[in-house]
Image (cartoon, rainbow, N blue to C red):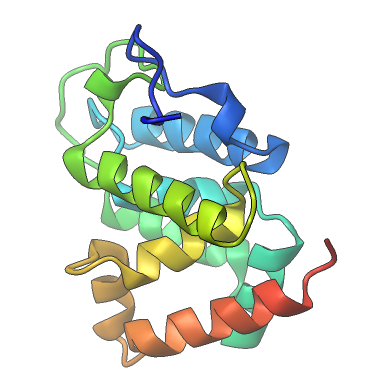
Length: 163
């Protein structure tokens, strides 16, 4: 497949494993809940925290992070108080920020490089931390945890997660 999108603009469901599809649905819900009109990278991260697979849970454990607490912090940090009501959102190209589209393409490439045809939550998590100028990584850097450390812990968690 040349692109991750169908001709209609919808994200191709064939490139996602079931856990990743759930993460993206959670990302949409958190986009709405924080009053944004498009899915941004922090919303992808919120989706990972809201629907963690064993790899994401292992990463959080290695980091010493409380997943529900971290989710609350990100939701509060990226909430737009006085925004207009959010229209319905779909996993369509038009509702995804350029950074999210790039991240999804990079995660798909990472999966392909690993011999998989479907993106996993760990592909998303690791790509979130390795993307240049990642706002998610920047949030952690503000509290002294580097993107390199986040990536290292995620790769370790991925290697030890059950297949």
